[in-house]
Amino acid sequence: MAKNKKNGQKTGLIIEIISLLLIFLAIFSLISLFGYDPADASWANIPPAGHQTHNFGGSLGAYLAETLLQIFGLLAFFLPIGLGYLGLKTLFPGQTQKLARRLISGILYLIILSPLLILIFEKIAWHGKEFLAGGLLGDLLLGFLTGLLNHTGSFFVLICLLALVLLFTTRWTLSGTANFFSRLFHSTARTVKIRVTQYGQTRKKEKMKKKIEDKYRKARETEAALASSLKEKSQAPVLEAELKLAGEEKRAARTGKGGLKRGERTGSAWPEKQEERAAEEDRLLLPDLRKAGDYRFPPFSLLDPGKPAEKIDRNELFEKKHRIEEKLREFKVSGEVREYHPGPIITTYEFFPDAGIKVSQVAGLSEELSLALEAESVRIQRIPGKSSLGIEIPNNKRETIKLRDIIQSEKCQNSPSKLTFALGKTVHGEVYITDLGIMPHLLIAGATGTGKSVALNALIASILYKATPDEVKLILIDPKRLEFTLYEGIPHLFAPVVNDPKKAGIILMDAVKKMEERLRQLSQMKVRNIEQYNQQVKTLLAEKKGKLT
Image 1 (cartoon, rainbow, N blue to C red):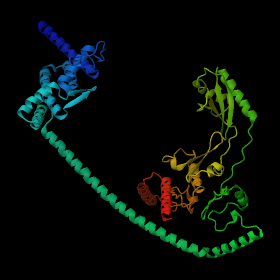
Image 2: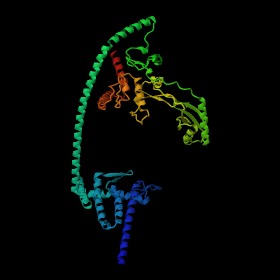
Image 3: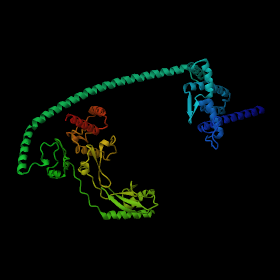
């Protein structure tokens, strides 16, 4: 009994040694394969003198990787995995008896897959060097098969042999495969049926939407025609009065007796808020900018004017300058504040650090400066193009920026774009505008009270003060009935302000159709945007006119 026990222990030790060797060989083979370098010394390559081996497994790894890749091809990577699997499985009780069966199965897979990989892939590349996909073993076996059969016959024979080996070595069955494909077919058929049904329902909904759209458009056209006829009837006496006033203006111009002011024109589409502001408006209008054809731009007097900027307290700025320098010196940051730029909200102090002072040293003292200056927050950042840092400190008295100050500015008025967007002022108090046409697709989002509504109203007002109804059309959708109701009736509207979400889809469909129509026109003219299109049309008209003359 003691002898049997000793023999059992000896057998267990041998099995563990074999398992350990298999696992080590698997790991070393994988390391050698992934560290393979075609320039390393091997039986297939003789490098120049002094060449250093790059393989992770050294010279032995280089020879091993070259041998595995040349003999087994793509299967060289699966061979170590199989060895490692055998080594791990052998460690478990009761698995030793299956070792021989697993070895035979692995050899059969190797014999079948080697020629099959050559038929499918022929060659593979690894680290810049090509190998046969099934290696020399696969090439030898395929040569034997093609001597008896052609390539097509060899392929089907190999597939059949692979299926047989799978049947004997795994739980895979033909009946299970047939059931799987049957379920897949029925599932696909159900999905296709559902999609076809959904498509039919979608088409039906689109037809219903089109009917509703046509009814809505006809009702809108009828309403517009009725309003136009009523307007013509009601404006007939006004036209006579305007003709009479025009005659009086001419007579007054000859005799030098006054005339009508710009703010007193009759029939204006934009009534003034207060009559006493007419004189102020007349002074503020820039020449050749406030009129376009028969349309009259809204007067600036509709907007609240900004308060005059308060006088800058130079003593306060000078005091803060010294406090900044003193506080920085406390932390051994030497330098000088040479310039300061007061703005409507913050004042920027330019700090020039001495040589050897890092930017991070100054930037890390923002909280300390906030305490020293009794400020809400202090931001420190490098000023591009200068050897200085900007220290931004909130003003004690903040200026309220009015939209009128931005839109009425010369910079905004002289902007050529019809989609000029008055954004506000910079930290230095300069007017800041942008062109909505060159901006990316815009989404205004944010928490409550962050200024979304102000931004939208500023955007719409900017367009109304720059573009005529013939140049820009607006679609306003306001399900909450709060933001855009005040714009009802303005001539820039493509349609009345939409408050019903169900009608919003119809309006947007019209917009999409218009967009597609314009895209076709741009494509025909081979241009990218409406500015290029208009320029191209002008050029063509000029050329046509030149030919006629």
